[in-house]
Length: 315
Ligand code: GRG
Image (tube, rainbow, N blue to C red):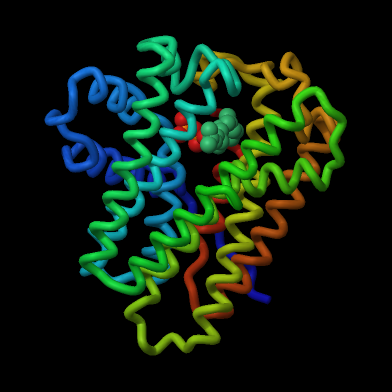
């Protein structure tokens, strides 16, 4: 099998995408000042607090790797922004006293600590609703591919995806769970929105490529879903590693909380060395998937570099 070539300066590639996402987010159509001031302030406080923009970058990077058309690119970017808004709502709600009860996120006070609990709940709800409004707009304008992409985002963000993972997480606190249960939890919770990005990008990019057969389309969807799962596990393992090796300044959020909250993590279950080994296993699986994508005629260099980059991230 052909070995995937690394991209030399992937950091600049990532930064180029991140900047594009940042500009689109700030252009005013995600949330606008017609909203009640208090709500607008709370929504924009978290949405514009930075963050890696990993999910929208992933979506756009896959779209471009699959040779998605220039014509559908702005609509695909709208979906990527919707995904970042769903991610931001999930962080606001995750930080609430009834969930993880966190004081810092993205290098600043959490939403409920800056405003109050009720406002934080509503800001999260409003970001979620605005995200679906954007997905409906794109679906109305672009038909079946956009509907499939939007449905995939709804699925992976919902009860069988991120929210499903969150309830397992809350339910597992203070309990001994098996490693298989931890994997299921994280594939759903952290992997949910990454799988959403993979599926949405694939539907949008391949929807109008008539030369791609139905068989090839479903193989590519399957490979990219497997890529999203590996990426989700790797993302979480790296997060668990950073939770014991990093600090608040570097991470922008409280560290060392997993042990305090008696949470099962890859580090608590496998030890630090075991977690690092497991991370390398996910890297190898990602490499295999990218090689298989290359056999489908897809340039998967950026996808492999993204996976490697995120496994080495420091925040
Ligand atoms: C409340 C419905 C609901 C779900 C919450 C994903 C999630 C579910 C909570 C986040 C908890 C957490 C800290 C998980 C670890 C991995 C993760 C998703 C980190 C946050 O994502 P990053 O690192 O954050 O991409 P930035 O700020 O860079 O966007």
